[in-house]
Length: 133
Image (cartoon, rainbow, N blue to C red; front, top):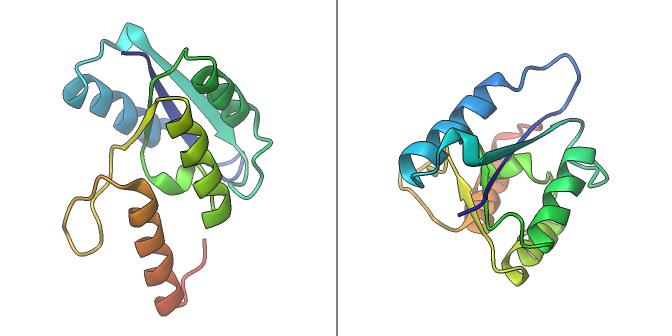
């Protein structure tokens, strides 16, 4: 298994440590992957821009078959819009890879294994509550 952990924060002032810890711990405990076998991709940029360096490297490695499992802390780390997320998930799946979220528990408390469904639920809840990220 070739695992790529993708971590993103929106601004240079923010810290990636919590996401790196979450994704690498998940990969080791749930996917049984050694730390030395993980590749961590990092970005400090808005998720509305898919021209992020770490994101581009990750997707290139996925499409080249160098990564077959993508782990994110939350699915919103990959993309902030449903359109970009749908494109990303399609690209990953077309390459034969999978996406895991180390923090994938829906707000209802039930775990879900569908990243798009989880993201749509979160967007819906944010819209109802007036929250914006």
